[in-house]
Length: 436
Image 1: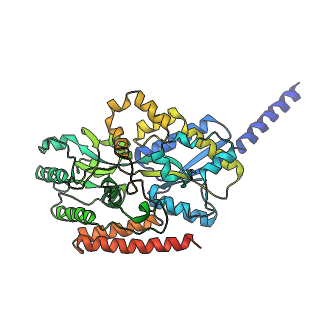
Image 2 (image 1 turned 180 degrees about the horizontal axis):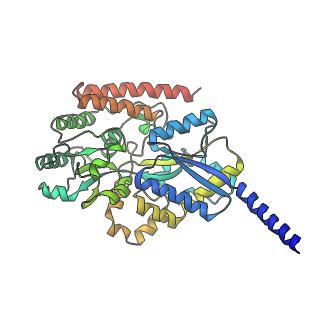
Image 3 (image 1 turned 45 degrees about the vertical axis):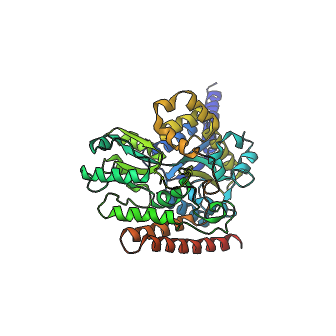
């Protein structure tokens, strides 16, 4: 009897051990920091606790550009993760990377997971799909650019109305500076995204031909228009006494808002989690400002944030785990909660309707601001989005030229003319690389 019990215990132990070893790891590389890093960790933990077959292992790889570069380098070295978070401007690069990615619509079909592309918000999925509507990557943390407002400091500075137009922002910045904000009247993160990409869409002005690259890789940049030059010249003029103060190429400067240094700050709506956790003042977010002399403005904003790309060359069982994780992420309750806690947009129609029906937006209008911007008007070919190859390099070039103008080394027009010329050279290099 004792032998039978012992054998039974051994058999149970071996079975348990085998089950543990059989667990398939899914590597997920991401670029989320602060409160949103905690969201990523929690999602992985909840998925891992929900089943025994797969384990999602998350790894932070730096800012968006760093994560994209790390993923590309890892693929070349043969050790890419299963899931790579890529910001929206990396979309064309990933689309052109033949063999490096596994399209999501194929992944879900082969894994037998329930998947209806129509269940997702088209304003978001359109960005990550082919012209036929085939979803290439999985939307994760979509956002748009909004203007964050420190209501307490505006009140102290005598700014009675939250600015809606750029001229009103300039005047508010001057009042804030006069009231003691010596180093920053207003500012923005993500300089090219704010002052070129979103500015173009919000004013229905082309950033490039071919619907900003959505209709073909043979696009040419056009962001040296009179509106673009005027806007940059305004920033150059206001930088001189720090009514406007440059805050860099990415999101690392966002703390200037939560610390109270900059009372008006344009950046992602996905900044919500950090603002909520760290701001010690009354805050809100409002739509981006516009130039009232541009006919028809404001138009609609374009999305930012990132999606999840599935890397190529993995085993079928591993892909099955990735597909199950995407199904897990698409759950309506989980999506609604993710949206309400992080500030990122709901990716499914059901999650949006559930949040709206609950009265959440009446109590939390901040989280509706990007949705108002994205749906402000029917998108045009200037405001559907953008898709440029090697966009990471293009953003660096644009940033360099903006910085040279702000430093007084070039006129605003010369800087943007140079940025357009250099960007077109990068586009032609990309076009040649994908047509081989």
